[in-house]
Image 1 (tube, rainbow, N blue to C red):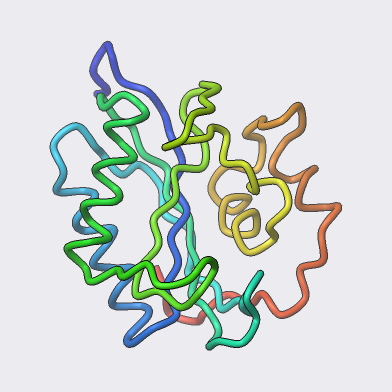
Image 2: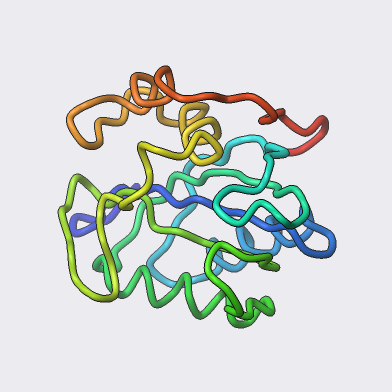
Amino acid sequence: MPEENSAEAYLGLGSNLGDKAAMLDAAVAALAATPGIAVTARSRNYRTPPWGDTDQDWFLNGALGIVTTLPPHALLEACLSIEARLGRVRERRWGPRAIDIDVLHYAGATVSDERLVLPHRFLRERAFVLVPLAEIAPDLVTGGETVSEALARLDRSGIEPVAGAA
């Protein structure tokens, strides 16, 4: 049963280095083990083409639904800490990464500062985020439209579910 001061949030996961599926699993396990975070839903993993900087390997992406007692900035810090523990090195924008954990949406909160923008500033522009998110939260409203409505406007080519992924 969620605590009284808990909030529903959604996270995006991605990896394109090493054993991508194992990295997503490790991130989910680390999130689930974090005090104040309970994982409530997980999409399948999706093989996706690189976005932004396209001169790199394909990604494995997924989405999580969580309930958390952490405020938005503390949730971001927990995600960044897990990324660091799992070997994330930030070398170039949109470059290769062992793991990426993005806070996509937090209980309808709007945040905009140098550390965090909620909802995520590129959420409604990225099919590789919306496809897995639509699997677990198709009716989630962000930016005045549902995840499904935002996804319907985007090109989903090259985004495929990975067989056997949880």
